Image (cartoon, rainbow, N blue to C red; front, side, top):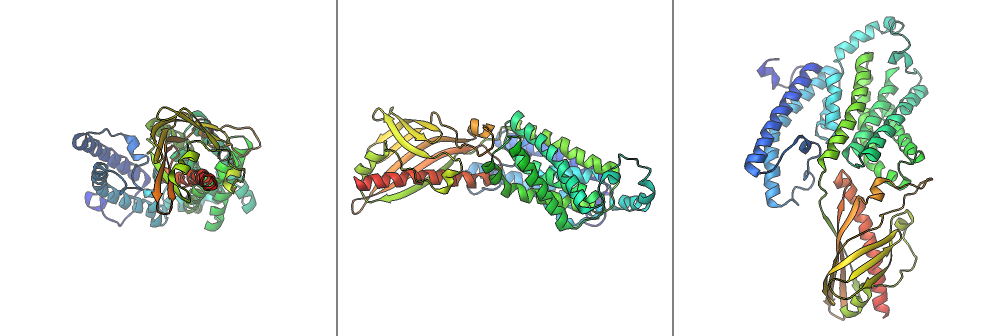
Length: 465
């Protein structure tokens, strides 16, 4: 391909050319990025920075220095993004697929798996040639060929797809959770995508299927893979339910992409090579993510109530409060840890407060004792954040090692007219689940409900006294 045609939207691009151009552009971009990061911003840069770009979902919230760095790297990336989109559109045209699939170019981690798929599958012309000889070749390929093994009927094909993806999902999850103890993009994005892709690809191998059917098989494969994780004591029901809203759309993406690629006649070798490459590549990406030690950003959650009592009476109750009546909202019936009472040993800075939860006690050394306005404390030790619902007595790493980690807490009391008090409770915590933007929705809600259980109890005690 000439230099002029390289940047034009028209034309097609073969898999070898696509891989060569893509790998070269990535290498050039890495050299530029690393030099700019080191020379202009005095900060390190590695390949792992492309894995899950930090700050992409919260640019405005970044400090000014971080914003300058982010916008500089974005400006460098724009021409490479444009060229990558052009190449991807040409490659999709060669495959006979819709250019709309270019959207996967912008999905973290999925874009790497998408690149693998486009670099292996042959163009549509190869598929047409294979279609001409399929009837003659199918008996010559032997009993081990995919088309011979793939059931022609819809039920058998769907069953084969979901049965094949279950052990793949279990092995990938076992590696990510049990070996790496990593709950990140590879687990919550990569595994659902591969599960959806494999189940839909197998479903389409025997005969062309409808897109809606392929996507449904992908979701069914995901549901059965999640159920198998419950059966084999990998995870509990509640965590699987929380993961489903992010995993299901990703699995649907994988299923729809596989339908687009495999609904046409497909030679056996590239079909098996594509599925095998995805299964082998994902553990490498998981290992890279684990090695990156992506830093968890501290998050602050603040809740408040208005108490019809003076600040001193409120203070007397919050320092150490009596047993909370066991009237729990639905959330705390799901295994999520909930506060029961608070005790304190000592007085003033250096005293230690014990906030007893259903799973154990938070140990909270007092740092600021400004009676009756502010009580601030660190968190020296915390109990498990939940008890998983499971037929087995399980302790997944994210529970045993507290991937939701409280760092600091504070109560502030503000006197209001009429002898009232505004009572604010704040928790600073780290969430080690990725994608952080998604999991923060759950963690913020949990911590807010824990706050309100405590604040409403203190309010009731202070107003009664």
